[in-house]
Image (cartoon, rainbow, N blue to C red; front, side, top):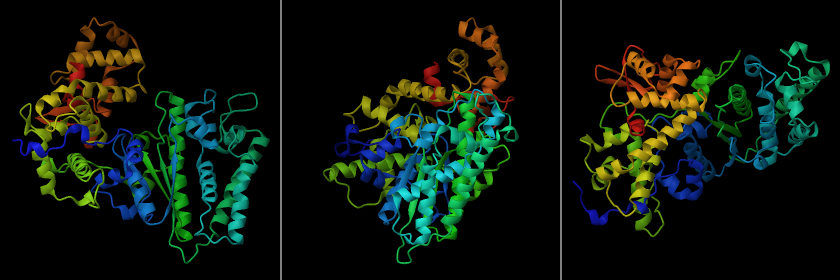
Length: 520
């Protein structure tokens, strides 16, 4: 039952965050810092000390937000911090040359296995050595060893390392002078082999000089490199393989750089955010990154393992946003020094009772909210910003409001999932897949009934899908992997995002609550 309505904040004065965590961080760093919820399985000292180096998680799980949170902590302790972003939509004029040139490589002359065998390790290491001298850290003694190191690193530009042709030489791209395919390194021209040896030797010499650097004993300062937004091109299969190889070798390069840094006193620390799907889909021919990530990484987990659903981490995150919004408004746009990372459960419970109806469609409200999500912070941001935009003058979350945005929320969620599926299906095929789901979505369905609905349909898009090379069993497996559907058996529901990655063809299928409306 609603209490103290006159004291409730109107939704237009609430801040729920942004789908782009960098925008949220830039818009109000202080609010971001105070309202941030640290995942319970993450210990900041592990990352700030260099013990852990990789933040793993699916899209929307909060990797970028966590990096921004760590950036604030790093700088608050007097350390230096350099962000390295690489995203498909960053304009070329603000990309680094190395990253720009990688996008220009023509992959059409290479087959998939050749692309996966490319080696980007030395390129990444040379790239990061350049970043070190650009920052010119004063906590490193600027003695003869530093000067030799700087001179050698400057050769990276002097020898035009990051122009397209040399990137091909270093990584082993099999493109000859006449653009003919070269299957392996043994058939490379002598000149190309010599170029590759020259750059490999440069990387080796820089590594040896790096190990001779000495930290100023009077300084406790460190330089952190935070790497983020390395995303796979999922539309183009060959670019997908190239990007997979790049990220695979980034993991290897960062691991080695951190090991080298440890030898000289750990003055430099590299931390990278890596999408789980990248790790799971990686083409790592002859290389093993799983052990590196297992030993030196942590996976974001927002699932509540038993207990009261109101204590779910994503619900706690939501309530902390409301609490911080109240504080911001009550103090004339000035949050006090409260650190909300350890808000007691009683305070959050009071926020829940004051602002939320107890039931939505005969379900506990918290359970309803959780079932609209894939247990990701991004889902909460999407849902509650829609409610805020539609009902800005309201000060209480009612069933009517949740129902009022359900169609739009469902459509937005489907649109994001469609982007993932577009790596597998063309637009016509995706339309056919969606139309079969529309016929099957309102109740649990079996694999056989899915086939039967498709085969009996007169829908042109479905007929076209069946005439293509697409196999319906693979469709179901793919839909399960992106959480469109789950399995239902003896009243127990399984979804990939709950850590159950394998689709069962023997059990019933059920469409996820978040997208059922757009399929109705």
